[in-house]
Image 1 (cartoon, rainbow, N blue to C red):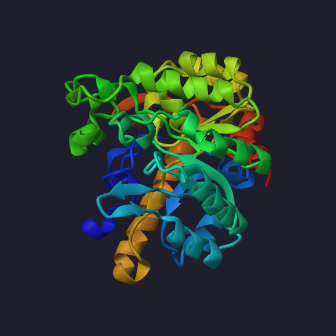
Image 2: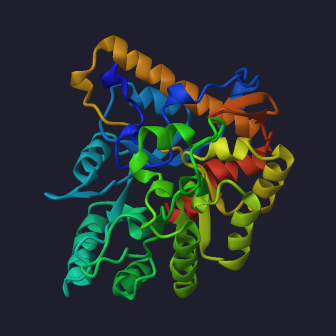
Length: 362
């Protein structure tokens, strides 16, 4: 049923995350459920556009709060954002949600581009934004007046980074796509097969004019290197989730870089569990929990049955990720099957909560 499209990734312009129906878990509920409840959690990458009556009890059960991450979309009519809806939801649930603003490159040739965006960001910081997101339109979608794709290290953006450094506001950077976007879509076992099948407009393999994966990642790396005093949270494991060694290389190189997990657990499950577990152990202070979960339909437009189903699906999804991180049970996510990581309680506390607190200075 269309109204039950629960996760925002189903929307045209949001990448990476799949709906819960595409993430079937074979795990059993963790035996020591009290551990799940006792560990505080922050979902640092969420998209709950509309409030729900069940939110207070649901988030209390999970001992969790979340950051609502703005999604800007540009079309012929201008820029459409999620910001106003998130502000309203945050006001309705101030104990549950923080806010993340956004920056998009549309209009970068305007001589007042940096000034205007700085003024807007200041207003949104004053309204509660704790972070600013840049999206994959940098590198993949948005062009300047000359027809060139705007990369994240474009010098015309530098005044904005300088402003954010001065204000102590970090950046969430969703730059690039999974490397599979540049490869033929001929393997149904690919964890991103479903997404690019449903959204071929982001399957870069079909669009040779789009810069290469390597070009976009290199621009991202140059940007991080040029701004060592800017705290940067690379969303979706920095579009390098297919290879934890590649992520580790950047974490070693850039002390100001952190990563978050949203919509990339399938990529982790597809790799050797011991290797992934060692990665989490080594970089336990630099990995932050995120999901990309959210909603896009007002509660009044849903039946009571639909609301209950939505809640159950959300609970199942969080449980599945908890089982992968905290147990050694068998798990299947996006067609990838493996055993869980069974991370220690101390690592779980950092990944689920403390790293987000430290990064956002909550």
